[in-house]
Image (cartoon, rainbow, N blue to C red; front, side):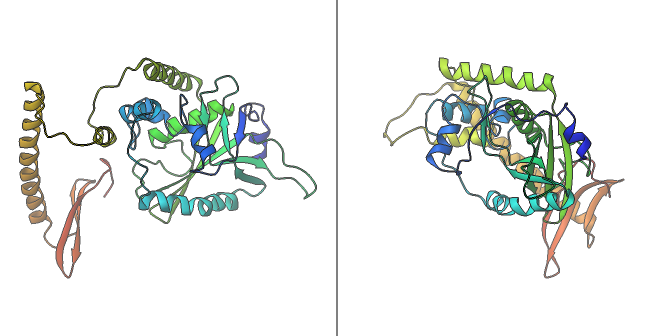
Length: 316
């Protein structure tokens, strides 16, 4: 990022409203994110692209109904622990700029549109007696175990749910560029850049409007196959009544067929894995041309597991 690009009027200073620098998990932080608001981490769920939430689970949250408690997974914990380290790496790579905590913001006109970016990027003052200029771009810090959904360094290829997140952040603050600093697999550091797209932002705003209308009108989204949906349904009942509940025949058949299908799929997967291991022998990877299919791990000289490659086009 050059000084010229930051100074360019195409990248204006924030025109959103700063709510404050709120401590995650505090009452004020929760209040800024609940109710009839949509945050940057929620917008991907609104459009059905979030790996962690579904429209169904988010609808229940916004409706004030029971939702599963937040779970501090190892991935979340280490992502939080490493955020400052990755941000420091970006800082080291960009002398002359300062990436400072951004705080929680709302859109100047749409009070329900909220965002808490990781960092605001400032040009550093020439001397300690000068205040930094207005922040004009954003920095988003991520960690990931795999790099399949991330493009090479310097590109704009980021996971789609993160693209939704930063478009919402830029739209909320009135900014036009976000830099990503991502640490993949604990050692592969990459930087990517996403520029604001008005047409995409409008799609997200319209979807959020419709979603909030559904919350106000009590229009529950249909049950889908997301784990977040199932976990949300699990926490709705309170207690246990020893009664029989009549259910539609088609729903019973769907459940029973799915159970049979799961057993058949497990059997077929076991057979398919056996065939691949038989092909691999003492090798490590199964490939078709330049495409990697699966890899073998070994403990004490014996096969421990056979694991699929998640990218369809991983080069051998």
